Length: 456
Image (cartoon, rainbow, N blue to C red; front, top):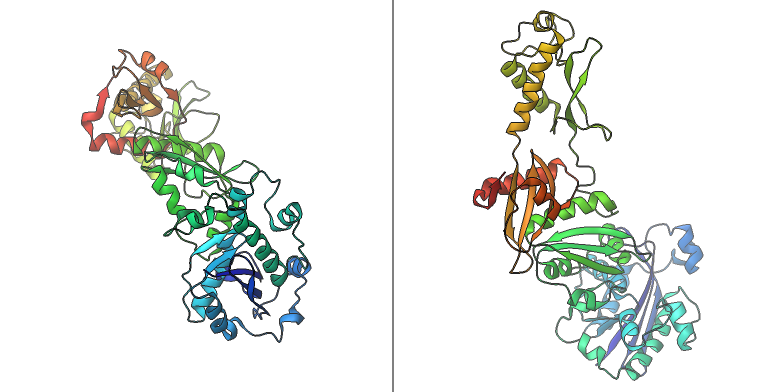
């Protein structure tokens, strides 16, 4: 079996928007070097200054070098029918696969990552970056951050790994399409192998232990593995894979609970790679306040962290529609509901059955009684129910509680028996933040599966 040990230098971190400036390929039989190829490459783009400082490769050096499509045929011949080996293999492989396809060649070879191999065959080292790893195991790494120097050092390292592979780690990774070769280099394969095939929420952490992504799944193992099943050349995917060092998870009884927990955790942790729900919050609320004359007044405004609304809406139009219903049903004043600018309501927004003079004809006490009836009506029409479903274990049930239209929290009932009162049920559940996204999820499931709802 022959191996193609590869190193490249590039103009940036992702293949779709960057070029290759240098490539080196060492053909190796597992013991010694059989062939060596090295070439500068003209990327037809300016090399960023910090990369010039890192690699020593300048724009002048590559100005007359061949373009990648000029050497693609030779590179393809060198890589064909070899095992593709590199230190952090998915980076080099993604670049070459992308640029080979642009040049009209396919790259579909088995891969080995010397970072992952080193962690298994040479465990317990302080660092597995190429420079520090070579220093720890006594490999001479000259011309670091140049393709030729790094490729030859990686070849020396690979020969050492082959010689010390007592547990046949390499042959195990090469069996079929071993999923480990697609994992980010720093993620322990055991963390993926130990994932359950149940619903839940998973967390990806960076090198310093910060959560960078939260996701939900009805099958945790399958969903997490799907993140690594392709090696797209775009910046977002490559940056994402490069940052992942650790995975954890929390099991949930149902897919709905996983949805809820995911939404809650995204807002709690603000992971950098979660973009869909971080800004999704109820935008408007119906608030109640008392004016100087003692009248209770409704107003629709954007939600505020320090005030609790009587009701929430996604749009101001939805809020106006609900408020007109209250004006019509309880004889409220459009002016005192801030839908009219003058006492006669002549220039304001009218509601059916509002004569514009109700505020003048009623005392504050009498008018406030109407407002209280409107609030009570809203409370009455806000549902209180427990959504009961299967638990994580066969001897328990999951419970999601909605109290007066608001999501309260969720948890598990070991005995499968609901308490008699809301207060007793709340003691058994974990309180969680409420928002429109979560409420909409619960109400949708409740409408689809009414038999799972227990009213209080």
